[in-house]
Image (cartoon, rainbow, N blue to C red; front, side, top):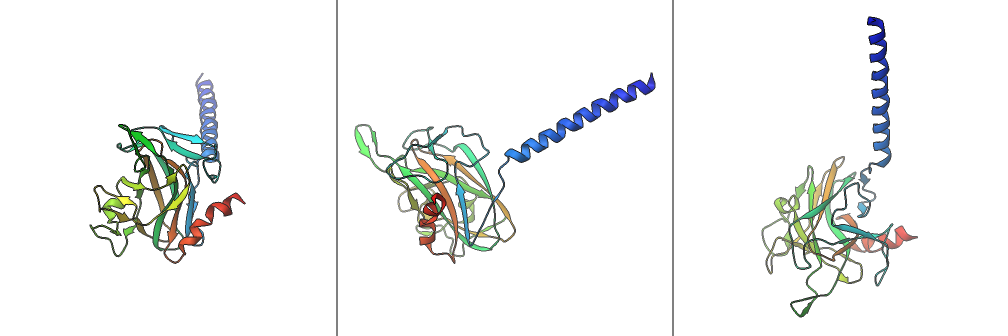
Length: 233
């Protein structure tokens, strides 16, 4: 009787062990690996995430121009004018070359009629923050057109841009902690060998995002402009 219980226990143990291996294997097949920086650029297709999309919707219909990858994301929550961070999407990336990296976003906005007035300054932003061991740029300051302080880089901060129903790359003075003449440049001092997590959250309804890049200071900005053509060829 004692031997029978041990045999039964052993069979159950092996069954649980096999199920655990299956779960680990399934996870390894579906989990997104960290995007590696290459030649001073981290390129991320924003539809390529393990996160639940929530209020983000995946589309593959062409706007005035085309998208890269398998599609683009449109935020459907909040309102076209504003809203709190919603439906966070997570992406991991690894840096090989240390130094200053500038944030670039390929995005599209939309003209919206609010209270009887057509506006082109809405439906044009989302939130970004980065988690990990990094510093702000050397010219970070709490003033208009300065590099963003570390607190903003690690908090959900609005980033705006885009053309009307057309994807364009935007960068520079696009980080917006709030108020007129109060913008910053998203610059990150990343460390070699470190893995970071980017979190993008929805802010304004109808904002579309295609892809994103972190560009090392040694790489010309025009290199980012050619990324979509390179990935579509």
